[in-house]
Image 1 (tube, rainbow, N blue to C red):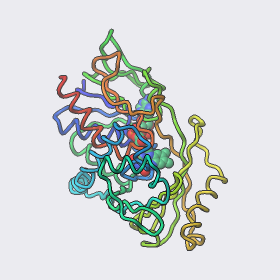
Image 2 (image 1 turned 60 degrees about the horizontal axis):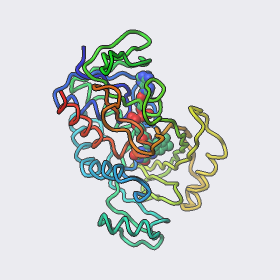
Image 3 (image 1 turned 120 degrees about the horizontal axis):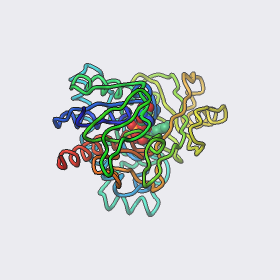
Length: 329
Ligand SMILES: Cc1cc2nc3c(=O)[nH]c(=O)nc-3n(C[C@H](O)[C@H](O)[C@H](O)COP(=O)(O)OP(=O)(O)OC[C@H]3O[C@@H](n4cnc5c(N)ncnc54)[C@H](O)[C@@H]3O)c2cc1C
């Protein structure tokens, strides 16, 4: 019997596990495959919504609170595990949208300043993490802090008694717990009925092998971005496709992402595409994160539906779900 069962081992599940175990809970985390293989791995790792004024106030609130602690959190995880999530304040150079009336009004209201740049607006404070490394470090960190991780274990349904959950049923056996936290990303609605359905929006991305400093800042233009990693690798993303759980990648998207990068940095025409992949963003029907108690069950909590912002909102979402759960028990 666990105080708390977490279903899903992406950034949301693992950050929730970290926060709950630090608050004194006994935590078991289940994943249907290995942790850290899905959206949180596939994403770009930009620690900000792309165009904040296009998002609701809750998304921005969760993101801003997370941005304030991300650097310190990564440093702590690095210290505790020896694995570096490569948190980097690389700044973001936005080439479009920043002069629209909506953007100007939002920036004035939030006292957000940018540095004028010959090609656009430089948001110097925006950071990135190397998300696959963050996940590797997080996994080691939570194991070290006492979280039990059980992989290759697919949760099929909640075990319930009226308005209480008793735990979950998996393909192998039942797991009993005082509470359940749903962190199953794009798959959340596949095993649990939710008032707002969660569904996948596929995103394709490529990574180019280049040299450090070819690209200095994250570049954002017309919803697409170029992310320079410390070692010279350059991520280019991403597509937005509502095609269910179709994981295939296509030549047309690969070429258009490559062309987008080369149009800005001609030298990248010589760069090899090392890898091309797709991931499933957890979108929700309400276009809002599902964060809080399940409407039908007293001891089931939701932390899902983060769509394009799960990496940047994760620390504050984990904190809030922990506060809610520890105040209620
Ligand atoms: C191409 C792309 C680029 C992105 N770029 C960014 C970015 O720059 N910044 C940003 O903030 N966000 C970005 N995102 C979004 C971000 O990746 C997601 O919002 C975030 O990863 C969601 O985290 P998660 O832990 O909920 O989901 P996931 O990482 O998908 O984890 C869910 C986990 O639940 C497990 N699971 C599902 N169902 C079950 C079950 N029944 N039983 C057991 N386990 C189960 C899965 O195996 C998986 O491990 C991007 C996403 C994509 C696809």
